[in-house]
Image 1: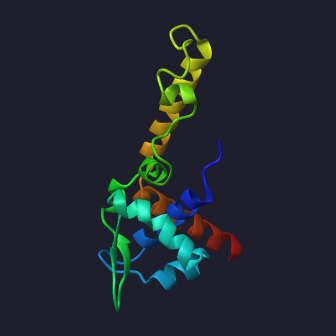
Image 2: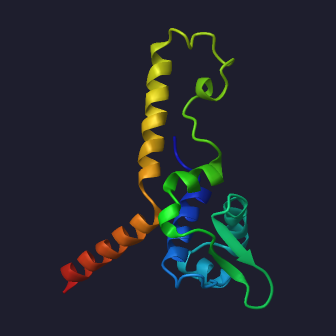
Length: 146
């Protein structure tokens, strides 16, 4: 399983928004420039995030985007599910009628456990955590260069 490019860019863009002054509107062109994404693709990426209540948009002159929630309240799972839908590793986990073997299938148990564990890991990391980690990583890189 590979996440889509849209989800990858969504995570990067949300981290970028979280690094901006609180409640500050960020221009679309600034997000596009810093995240190396086209305006059309950014619009596509942000539509499900707006619908999920993660991002707000403001139209018109001086318009742009801002986080709708505190970065500590937005998890990696929130972003993934906004972009790609509920996390499901296998068809048998999506539709109970997909496979008649669920009651005894040992693979079904593994898919279920893996999905649950993956969701737990993604829930554990908030955008605030990722901003902090990125700042720490950049500080370490600066030390190495000095």
